[in-house]
Image 1 (cartoon, rainbow, N blue to C red):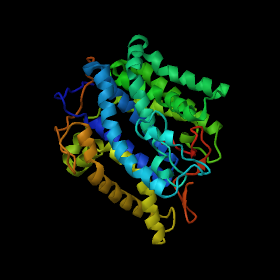
Image 2 (cartoon, rainbow, N blue to C red):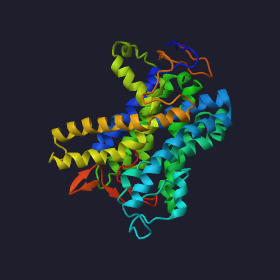
Image 3 (cartoon, helix red, strand yellow):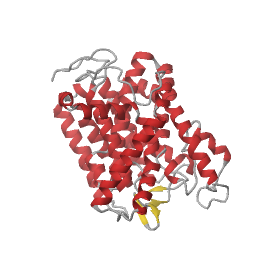
Image 4 (spheres, rainbow, N blue to C red):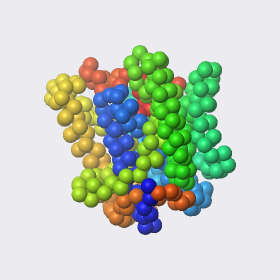
Length: 398
């Protein structure tokens, strides 16, 4: 298959579409807790893989310092604005040192400024902080990417497989770190293989890997992930997000397929509304991710107020409508922060910088042709004790 080279600075429509679909999938999963969604699209693995691919491009083009700094600069201001609202609201609602599950430790508030650990929050304010593990994990991958990139260039696919071995060691030895950093370790080994697979996508190694090698590898990874899940069910059933080994192997198998294919996405030219939606989701990805989860709780409160029964077709439909409207409102109110972070002119609606290209070839190598309860109504998925020190839902790694 021949790769089409896009003009410099243009976008890869397939990668943008894949990321937009993954973000939407995250929102739907958090709203309804449907375990089957993780089989159809392991969204977090996809998001980490795409981020790894883009990071590799930046490292090769701009060097480690600029690549790392540009991502920190784009990530943190949106988090700061979100925290400037979330933390005072939780304090106003009584968050203090006597919180039975998540007592206030003022020094830990620094992680709302630079999230090397999960930003803390109160029990009541869980919708504000529960999903921020992703930003913390993303930041860690960004910080260590220069080293990972150097090792990858020397050891190639061995670096992709190394996290799988590390995860097996952790599971079978029962090794644990202190609560504050145990979750950091687990998230790193769970998604490192996907991040580094993004390197292989970007430098062309994935495209050069013969199908006679790639297809059996994907089949073996997916089969083992599925086998491990069905032989290690949790109290909540068969959910990839509750079983780290299953999640890791299945996610990596999916990522290798998703990054190998290169569809033109030409049909988007005939559906301008869809193309615009994909563009906006990518331009406001951080804002959408930060605000979608607390807004799910707001939408659930509205539906409960009007007596819409949980998990009925009416509930699902209205939840999607209300959540979409609330997320769009958040984009209009807070999305401009991402413009400022990226040194663009602030705007309520993201500006279209370049026409999207059909397919962008890799740039470094030539390629061959519990829910939250509201008056007894469950929202999302149940809460279980967490190695992160704050507690987490039974299916937090969306």
